Image (cartoon, rainbow, N blue to C red):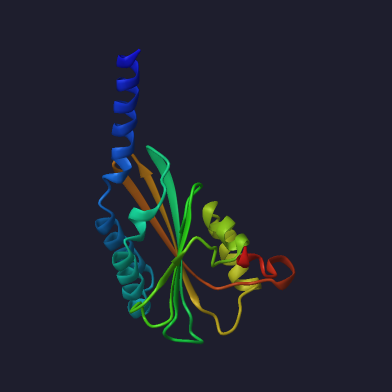
Length: 180
């Protein structure tokens, strides 16, 4: 019986070690490179997002599913207030948000949702066609650019996909749902 328990804990520790052993700094840098490739004019914002991820170590703070997980990130830099940046990272187990009002010099980390639920659903489904449709039909003015990132972790391998789109909002559908 003791042997079975030891084997079970050993297997559990090995499985958990696979995701916690990810080089999140390298992944964060790869996200930055992919974002720059799709929207090079957003260089200032992309660098701010990168610094926020690195400074807060937010990828290490996530409660992950082992050994396979998909992590999503939404990032926005508000054009109305040029110094404000918001970053939200989530998976099935956890939601973490970083809010900064001063180009990342100071920040607040919460477990609160900072983007509308419908946008999160479209990103979680990686429904690129519907996101583009929403951007055209429900885009808001001034239109802030949003980066969406999907990180698929499978053991020690990661697949990273990034998308850039303009913010959208539909009052009838979205209301104030992001304040949950």
